[in-house]
Image 1 (tube, rainbow, N blue to C red):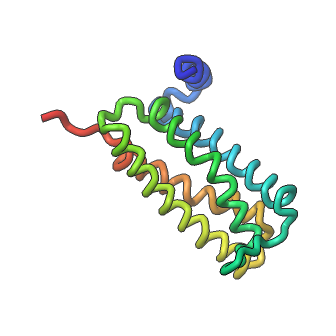
Image 2 (cartoon, one colour):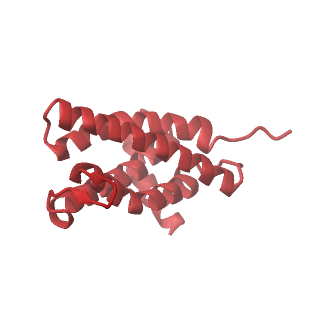
Length: 159
């Protein structure tokens, strides 16, 4: 499967070869696919599973647009990690469990950023939830790429 994904990405990379490194294109392709999946899952969760109703738990009520974030994350966390580890940053020589822990911390930070931006855009500025999610994603993706490249999946110098 890895070989097939890389073959497809390589095919579409050719017109962009002079504009960006292959790793950046792989990130855009894999991250873009996972982000599209995230937005679709968010939309389905918010509109069809939660039916735009808040989730009422014994000690807390979670607003529907926030609960949908967590529902989408349950799928996109593992797919994002696997794509990053085996397709985008495969040259990383850090141990898998170190990568996973760092990825978990990154996703936690991104989740907080998502939460903060969603609260700002929906609750403060009055945006509709799905466009707010798309705008939020644009900000978070830039942060995520830089963090993954420089921290989560970095190549450790061999001593």
